[in-house]
Amino acid sequence: MIIKAEDLPPSFIRIDKEGTWYYKGNEMFRKDIVKLFYEGLRRDESGRYYIELDNDRASLEVEDTAYVVRAVYRFGTREEGNERIAVLLNDETLEEIDCGTLCIGRENILYCRVKPGGHPARFLRPSYYQMAAHFDYDESLDSYYLPLNGQRYYIAERDVN
Image (tube, rainbow, N blue to C red; front, side):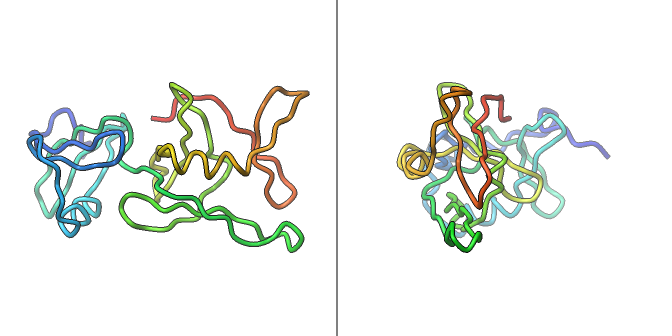
């Protein structure tokens, strides 16, 4: 059965571009409930979000992405060739990212892919600056990249959703 979020009843839940959850315009401050909703978070074929809990499904309004990056951590060393980047997400999980998924979207916002299924995640301003501190510039290509383990991960411009 193909599920289309647009055909589901509304949940009256919205996630703003900063990753804050709201119900009927009021911020959801109970972390246990937000965590439960993250466990039920799904995307349809077109990339629209909905929540599925048991046999109940409802559409979800997402301003930009359901996941946002709050902090960036770099582990390992260049000399040992075991460098990796992990991000702290708004669902309070720490996840190593595939640096090949880094990209710049509309309004020069930095994104990456996270979670099984490759959900887009928006870097908040502080985490963007943390990540940008690791970028180098390739003059010949007029492009920024992340050097990691002897590879260059160029930051492409593309639509992320």
